[in-house]
Image 1 (spheres, helix red, strand yellow):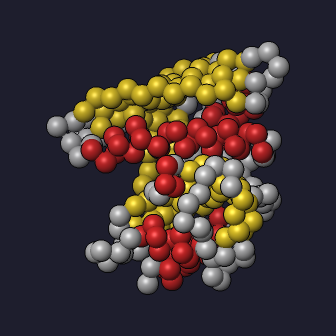
Image 2 (cartoon, one colour):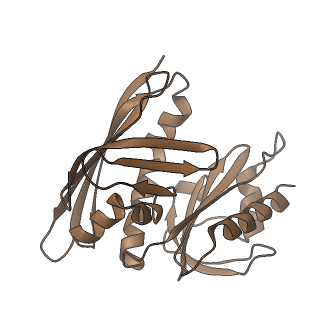
Amino acid sequence: MPREFELHKEIEIEATPEQVWDAIATGPGIDSWFMGPHTVEPGEGGRMSLTIGDFSEHSTITAWDPQKRLAYRSDTGPDGSFHAMEYLVEGRDGGSTVLRFVHNGIISDDWGAEYEDMTGYGWTMYFHTLNQYLTHFGGHPGVYVSAEGPKVAEGVDSWTVLSEALGLPDALEQGDKVHLTPEGLPPIDGVVDYAVPGYRGLLGIRDAGTLYRFHGHGEQIAVGHHVFTQGADVAAVSKTWRDWLARVYA
């Protein structure tokens, strides 16, 4: 049966309230650390939308107090499910900002995997990415690039295949420098900015122009990168990674 839930997060970011607000309350800002693309109609009662491939989600803004509070609620699904988000922005002396976040709602009958994703590393990694975006890319908007690999055969460890295809070592920790060698793509020299214990299932790597995010386990791997290179072609970069994943898991 459907399940009610409520999640809380709090992070401190070395950025001003103005920068944080732009990152959470504008389409280009949200696309720079979360999924995308988003559109935002500013003001209470305004509409927000997220579209990825065949998936779309639409929300109504329920609170709009620039640089202080933002809240919105998704349209209710046929099964009664919905998501409501609230952000509280508080400036601190020295130019940093505390961001408090509440996510509540109702998720559908098949809620197990969705709830695990949210309560596990999902929001933790997204807010880490927000911090990385504002800290290292100065609020310069990026574009979201996503691609899914094909499902692997039973008994194949998809994460091991990914690691070997990227040329990753057996163990990684946050702060490690890496040299990735994805066949057919330019080499990537960066630093591990996010890794879970054993680094399996979620991995974040940052270089001078991109926040690379690899995620998934079991039968399928996907990427959700944020590219800050000016003039980046989302469709072309997505196809490049989709084709690479198809070759790796052929």
